[in-house]
Length: 135
Image (cartoon, rainbow, N blue to C red; front, side, top):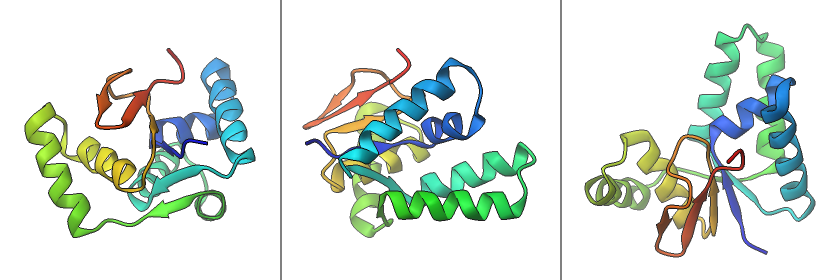
């Protein structure tokens, strides 16, 4: 089974609890969780917490969600290798700084799929493919 890196926008829809994107994110993450193949990074967890804070979630709710994400996922920590790879990806693909860190984290974690709404659906970088689960 492919390991799947899940970007922050998918997680935010999971916690939005309304609409078709929320249902799609819930179904997608639930299916991935069954096979214990979810990878994410502390960057993603921080981004999710920041968005939830803006949406007026309480600190208690944010701590619970962050803890749940950490329990559910393999977490990729930032490293020199990720930073250097991200720089090369920015140069080659004209990516944003933060997207390049997400992509390099997913690649170094051995993920075959990066699930993200905000990046180019179908873009293949080496053996990893970016997939917009809402497309």
